[in-house]
Length: 180
Image (tube, one colour):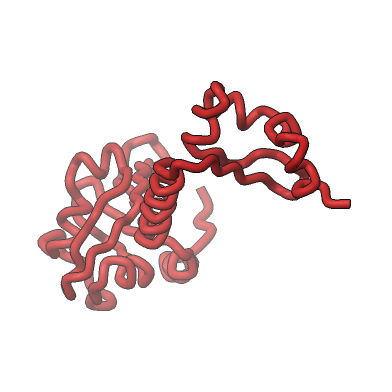
């Protein structure tokens, strides 16, 4: 089989990927870590030297469970800050089908998780309101109803979400939806 790219060219390409990349050989040794991994996990590697699996953060990533299942994991960087990363693991094979190692891709999802928590909190606040709250888009499609809105009307959340907004509005308030 013809060699398409040199090792140096492949490393250059992997350095341009916005995700962290870690390559582990079949013996569990980390043989490559890209710059994005350094930024996500908050450490610096010695350029040109293999990364030692003894490094605290990297050894956590090397746990068998993560290699097998990937998923989301929280880590503490050397500076004490916490980061939540999404990890995906894929084995790579030789031309004869033998597993040569694993490629892990890491993505920092810390801000996404913070936004999800904030959204859950705001939703909880809206659901605890005594008044009915119904949010709709410009076309009148209902995109959110709080608990009071569906319970006072005797529907489930899903039933109200499927209804046209006009069905829920009393005639006196119709002008608020369609003024004129």
